[in-house]
Each structure stands twice: as structure tokens, then as C-alpha cells.
Image 1 (cartoon, rainbow, N blue to C red):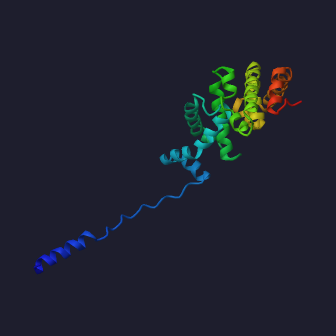
Image 2: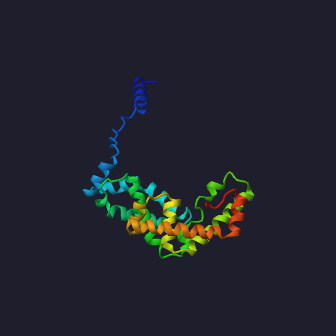
Image 3: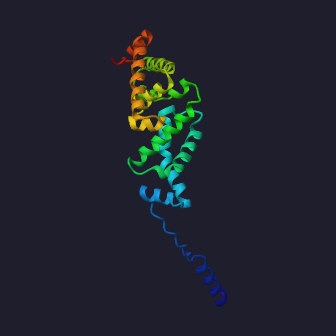
Length: 226
């Protein structure tokens, strides 16, 4: 091989294996805490809305699931409406409670307003209101009895006045306190307390007078509270 050829070969070898200089990576901005995020949102920071959506969407979804089940046809629409309501009312949040609690309350209020236009049975319990989770450890026969019992309870809830049924559901099933329920349903705490007392009393009276329900609950290992 001529000296020239050896030189060219060597040159090509060096160029072919020369490591590329990596492009410098842009620093990743630190995540904003809740106070900073809300401040940026109120100041009109265009990136804050997307960050707030990421922060709130999980709470929104879980709240909708608790109220109307995981398979409800309106879930995505309700989630979008809740996000719009949250961003539109952000100036009214003063930090009196945890941000997650406020998000859940506003979402529940959105669900409540929207579902009042639907049939009572549909807006009281969704098709997977936790029964599958609770029944997972039971025998097939007891699971069947529990599902049938819940179906009958749903019918009884649908037969009492909707505001009382909703208040009972929000308080005794979903765990909202009376102040939150008053905000969700747009009434005073006194009115919410009255609805809860009357709704609970009426529902329990109906359940106690339903012999088929008692039989189903007995089969599932449960009973109507006295």
C-alpha cells in the first residue's frame, strides 16, 4: 500500500469513529407547589393551566367515579366541565381547606348540577359503585346476593325525593361533611342537615319494610342498620 493510501485509510478510520459531541440538555424546570401553581394560574401564566390540569385531573376522576361509577357515559364530559369550573372559580379558593378537598367539592357540585337532569336511579348510583371491590372476597352465591341487595337499595333511593337521596349519598356513602354538601347542593348547612336526617330516616324505614332485601342481605352476610 502506498504512503498516500495508508494516510487516507487512517484518516477515514479516525473520522468514522470520532464520538459526536452531545447536545446540551435544557434544564428541567422544578415542579411548582400548589401555592406557586395557583399564583401562576391567577396571574394568567399560559403554562399554568396545563400544569393545573395535570395536578387536578386525578382528583376529578376519582370524585366522579365515587359519585356515579366508572362506566358512566358522561364521565369525560363531566371531567371537562369540572376542569372548566375549577379554573373559572380559582379566585374563590382561599386555602381554607386542602386543594384536593376543594377540587373534589367543586367536581361534586358540577356532577350534581349536571345529573339533576337525568333519571334519579342513574344519578344516585353508577353500575360499579364499589360492589365489585367489596364482593371480591365473597363466594359466588354471596356476591350474587350482595349485587341484588344493592340493586334493591338503589330502587329505594330512587323512590325518595332526589335532594334527600343525594344528601344521603354524599354524606353516608361518599364521606362529604355538611359544609361541603351545602356548597355542592347550593343550600345552607341547616337545609343540608335537614335533608340528611329526613333522607336517612325515610330510606331506613323503606329498607326495614322490605323482606326480600332482608333475605338478600342475610345471604350476603350483611343487615340493615337499626
